Length: 269
Image (tube, rainbow, N blue to C red; front, top):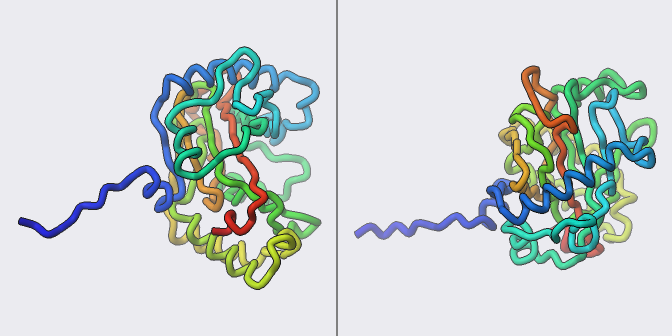
């Protein structure tokens, strides 16, 4: 008899190892996405959100543009339920009400170049999918990096049908480990209340270069009813719109929830 013990890879283990997790179609999330898509389309057409269009109107950023309540429900729609929702509550300890989600929609030609975008910035967006860690802001003319938002996780819920090459979400698997190490080094011996004041540019650039060298780039296309969960430290971005890509008339639309935490010690891990 073999003495080898086979370790079962649980969803929690997979998430902690690779820095992301994909959930299959859930009937509850399918119903939610149908209602949220109608609200998302209305957000695209709302003059109050006109300032969220970027890159030659090929990307609608849509921060806080989904009019959902604390249960995640948009007017006339169901509350957020399903396997992905159970996971963040039971495995990640999420207890807050849901904030208003981002409505992120990409369209054919993404990314066109913005008028205030440099050649270097545009090339990076196209060649490296604008890879970044959420909450890390580039500030001032030199775009010095400061951590300003401390998220618990990133939950993406697709709202429209789209082909796999229609500007899918991209992650670098395992990059969360490298980035967590980077933040621990950058914030060593610094009070959590002042972490946002620390210029982490050099730390971040070195860590990101290591991520590109060591971590596989994974595209994560998804359809309504599915869910994608990304670790708060995972490097991620959006791929350019493929030449043969197709999507609904309202683009490739995803609702993103990024709840923030006040517990910065827990955030750093």
